[in-house]
Length: 245
Ligand code: 6PG
Image (cartoon, rainbow, N blue to C red; front, side, top):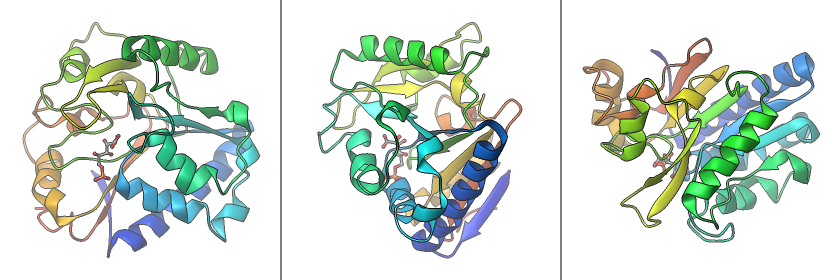
């Protein structure tokens, strides 16, 4: 696995922000737009804040950026648990991404309806056979989940069914917000670039299991992320990497 270890959360956020900037510039030069699926969670929030401050905030051509979400909690967009609300606060309040280029998941409606609507939206945006995001940002929980793909969850069981062609599904979660909408591994693995952002010693044992342990995706869903043709990099801090064998 391609892994980059940084001293601490801030160094991790700075390094990832620089990668984001480079990927955005390449994509905009190549195709006139940059499509990125954002992650929720506290680790990516540091990254979003970095992107919203100088010098990067002035380097990135936000008018060519399309923002998507890798998952969303089924709450209103202004709710404290909303991933959209977190990105709005950390990034969108500071940069001018055209409204029609902010593709949020409708957490405020029925989860299954929201999942179908988002998948339809993605199939319209990506006319090819799969959603080839330029970048998908992911976090990882200490239980090995990523996006809203939780261990032993219906979304993970469905992902292991090779016949499933879904790009977006609704899934129950035992966290604060009972339901979530998430990209499936099929959708995530179509991306040109996937970046995992992992920080904190509480994730060290799981990170080692995910990267170096046996393949057991039902209990470690992060192992389902294996881009078909794109590349995957694990951007981690020293604390999270402390048990890597
Ligand atoms: C979410 C994310 C989730 C997150 C992990 C890690 O909706 O919260 O999709 O998968 O990335 O739980 O979160 P932290 O970065 O806060 O540890």
